[in-house]
Length: 315
Image (cartoon, rainbow, N blue to C red; front, side, top):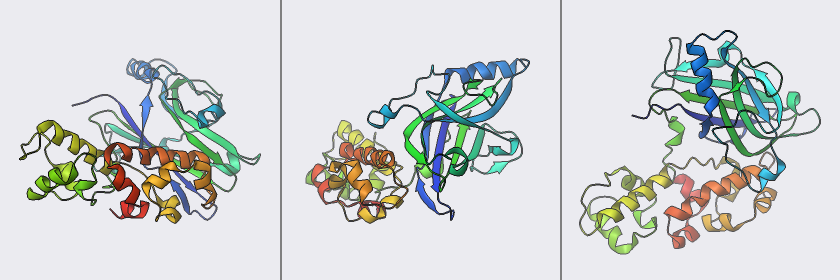
């Protein structure tokens, strides 16, 4: 059992009428080294140290829009912090194994906050590309305290008309993957959609009652299936799980439902944005394409030219 601290976060953008305009789905985030230092200080009852106190947001570096870097475990502050929100105790709750809030202590915390564009973007818009939780001896001043986690994400241009709702979960025991990760995305596509299976292996799988990608992803890859080498079966199962465990949120891209996956991947992000309504930024369109690009690893190229975004969603 993996006992490392793990984190997942989710962003939802709403407009003035509280309508959801973007949902990132649950994504993993990096727990930095200073989190362990803070935990040690809290266990020792170090004077002046407290737990989670602030949620800091930053605009990062504009160059990240073309080449987004990965955060490092040694990072201890944001690149360019623009604001931090004090977290009241009721913003931090314990979760049980069913992801429900409970009063008694557990090994999983959920932190929630809302960042209103009317507050943080008075000048028109505020680009956001990074965030982190801070505790210990943190104050309301930028770059103070012990950073707990660090996320660098595609640019969100927060305007006075938008509110960013953000949740983050910290699991201190066995890895707790939010249920929204396992969406079954594309699970009903035929097994022949997987790159490398071909008609022969597809026929062998069908003979075993394995017809869909979802069914393929659920079998034991170490079992013996006639005519399929073990190394190939493991490869096919891994590709099937990659497809079904994608956490793409297609709602903002519904007008593109009839477009093939190949055409969406070959389109420039700015062209995709131009054909959609407000709320979809260049950064979010790029993120959407990056997520879909994982399908190039798992699915057959010919299939990608015929599978539409709509059919993938329905699958």
